[in-house]
Image 1 (tube, helix red, strand yellow):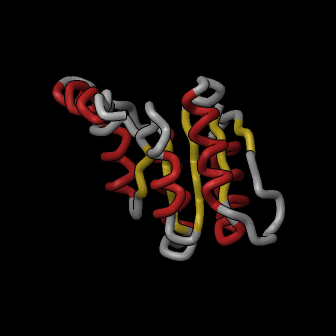
Image 2: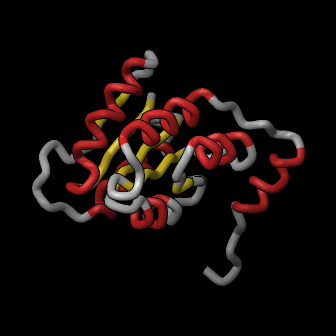
Image 3: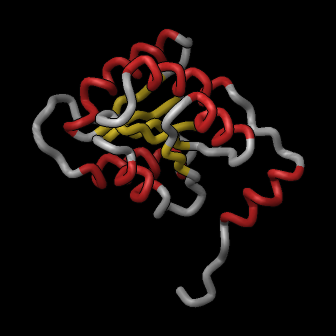
Length: 146
């Protein structure tokens, strides 16, 4: 299962990404919004991150104007490795080396063709493991001061 959400700035790109994900044979759950009315992106970033952390989905996709706010929001959740990607290379490396489980895209900074390519690559690229596994484990730290 793939979960996806956007804010109002990403609603049109989200529709295209939904077509790609479904076209690749994935089951997908759209967590909103369903129209272009102004919304607060953190609400939707938290929904996707929570679904991935809970195991309801293996991967999430978040789209806002720049992708920055969604990445910041999702990464507040332990266990989430949200990657803001801009091209095919960053999407591939986010999966291959960082085991990213949420792809963040900026609708105002990424063209639809590039976004579609990134989504396909992100969903089909496996985590390489090996030396990268230790590094991914180092991302998740237990904070003694919290």
